[in-house]
Image 1 (cartoon, rainbow, N blue to C red):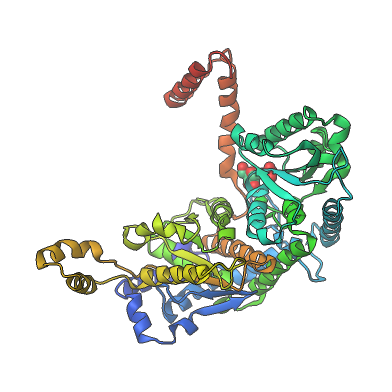
Image 2: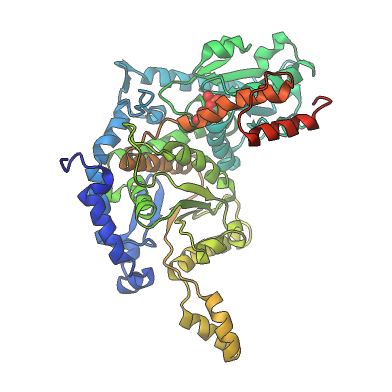
Length: 555
Ligand code: F6P
């Protein structure tokens, strides 16, 4: 086998990293900081309004050059270009992944099957602009001629998490009159709770589904439609209150949405990358089109950076390679996303779908099973709340979960010293993770508290904190449309760069299909006790029977 065609784990670059990790096991980050006062400057990079301090990682210059060598070995620069160019990098579905076209503010043409898609992207943005203006300026009103006060977005997965994150992140930019609600779950409580608080006369429903085949979205839309019809609406009035975004116009029309109320989406946008398309309409309605365009411009700035910056200064590439370093050479199964910003608290949920649906794969692009770990478990939540909940495991647990601490330098809501306190909390966490507390330090503290030697001996092991736990700190001036756009795009590109290293298709999601297929039969068996008795496995059969017993008299 030639070296060029060697499986990833047998390349010299991979082996060099494995050997290097053996050396690094003996190194503590405390010592690296003590030895090099320039470490912060050395491992600090900026792009598109975001700053990344990656000095609190288990790295040296050698580590980085080994990681860069691996990236080059995997052809990362060419594969970045292939994505932007519109090559069919989603090879299991033979499609490009062109979310970058949705925020392409340059004059560059982007072709799919020999046709420039940019005119369509621009005309959809212009349609969005007009629609957003009509709703916000009260030109488009409800059936009793009242202006809209509420927008209800019905969609799930990528047709929910991204727009919801952006809406919540940019709450300070919301229109004074328009409230935005999201309904995703098929759990009836979700839509019930939303419908309870809105008025059909002043509510606009946005039905968001790329495929227009998603069970949760279609069932919730039926409920919304019935509710509208039974509360003063009528078939003729539906056109004023129901708008859809989909790549499947015929299905939306069949469902009863007027064709002129349908905004397009395209096959070349993955669901989890679609918040930049008309799927972003709930966001655009609440923050306005100027702010929506600023969001796109932030993402576009990050795109330009990802495409042109040298790997060594490329934020998404650096973050991707650090993830590979920990996941493949240090045994980390998880990665934490810790936004220290109330408005960004939905970021972990969006990044869970983005990263786990993209890189949760076990075969390479040509279908060969991998013999290395791929995408990590993404988890997290808002700081400082997490410090009083799960950070204990980060500090003293046996599992390694590198973490991204994300914090703005300014808050939208200056309250007393809150922001300085929040910032101090964030920094103290990354410092504690890095430094830890040695046994000698623990003993000294206990002695200072006046404990006797027996008590010190007993308590000291519990007080020792190993440290040497890696983290990134991501900073930006304020959570503005531009910085939020750049931040989300940063993680999109990090995800792709990792997919390139692992040679997986980051743009398909076949794994979610099996549950959908099995769900159909199970639903038939739950609803119809006379359905042909097919036995599957004793657990599923038993649980179906249990459900039926509880619903003998109907639902
Ligand atoms: O079930 C997973 C999924 O296919 C996601 O990839 C997607 O974002 C979500 O469902 C919703 O799909 P749609 O926009 O087609 O309703």
